[in-house]
Amino acid sequence: MTERSDELATRLAAVRRRIEAACTAADRDPGGVTLVAVTKFFPASDVRVLADLGVTHVGENRHQEAEAKAAECADLDLTWHFIGGLQSNKAAAVAAYADVVESLDRAKLVAGLQRGAEARPEPLDVLLQVSLDTGEGGGRSGAEPADLERLAEAVGTADRLRLCGLMAVAPLDEDPARAFARLAALRQELLQSHPGADVLSAGMSNDLEQAVAVGATHVRVGSAVLGSRPGVK
Ligand SMILES: *Cc1c(COP(=O)(O)O)cnc(C)c1O
View 1: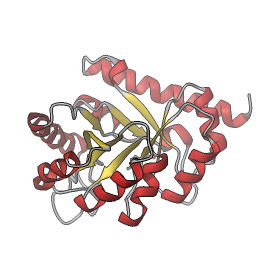
View 2: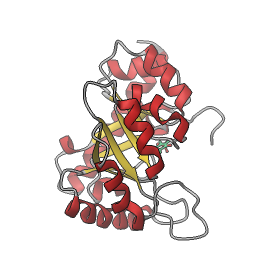
View 3: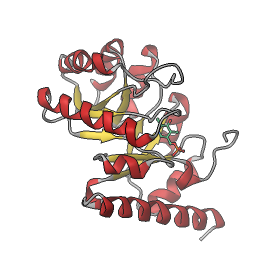
């Protein structure tokens, strides 16, 4: 084992223990929570190490980096989640390599994703990213809660897209437990009209416990697994 694979193994084990403890606390089956390792800024060699350690879902947030890494790791059996801000002129390209697009936040993206997904054997899984910001301090992306139903309908018109649920990032200026409580309510609402859309992607390195507590099915964990990102605090 190299030093890096040692480090990743240790970090990954700690994150898995946190997820298990959070599931125990919430009386949930740990099998109901999927870890998406967010590998942005880290090299494909780290993705390989993680795959060796049993990671099956990886997340990336920048198109060019994601596209290159997915190509370098094409021999691995991985599910690629695109979790970053999407430009409409890149949507089709993202749909060509991503297995799940978590950051669909406006109807304008649907046509590009649909077009990019046409070459795929299976429809593309998409999550609607919803904003949990309450006012001034926020600025993190996502659709307004009031727009979710309309956005879900737009996805419903695209036969190459499969609406799987919601994604959100907790605001920086609020207790994540409070923000995620709103998210859980939005999920219940969406499930009324779209019963199959039961995925909830929430929780990152600093708030995965609060997300598991409200029913997250996917946690997106970067720095706790990979270490601090180069050039990022
Ligand atoms: C970077 C990122 C993450 C992972 O953040 P960490 O705090 O490093 O765990 C999760 N979700 C999104 C949307 C991200 O951009």
